[in-house]
Image 1 (tube, rainbow, N blue to C red):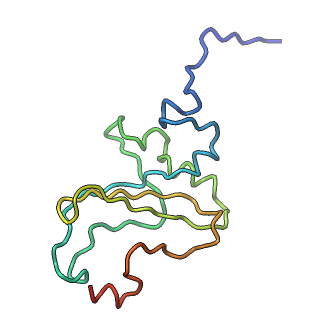
Image 2: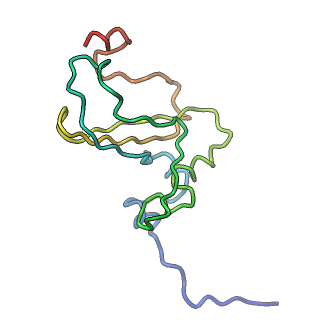
Length: 144
C-alpha cells in the first residue's frame, strides 16, 4: 500500500481562539452565539412623532449576506457565502425561529451606530417580541 507522510502539520487555531477570540470546540457552540448580520451608521430622526421619521435601514428576514469580492479582509469572506449562510445550512429543516438583536452605540439622538445580530432560536418557547419600553402597540408608538 501507499503511505502519506506529513512534513508540516497545519497550524492550530486553539479551538477557534485565533478566529473568534474565544474557545469554540465545535460548530454547535458557534451557532449558539450571536452572529453579526450587519451594521448601519446614520443620523437619528429628530421629529416629534416616530411616524414622521423615515426608516434608518431595511433588511430581509433571511440572514444571508453576500461576500465582498473586492476586499479579502472582509469578515464574511472567511467562509464562501459568509458565516451566517454557513451556519444556516446546518439548520436547513429545523423548526424554530430566528432572533435578532439591535445594539445601538453612541449618544442617541446624535450620530448613532446600529448593529444587528441574529441567532437561531430553537430552545425558547417564546416567539414574541421582548419589550423594554412602554411602547406595546401601534397606538402607543403613534402617540409618542
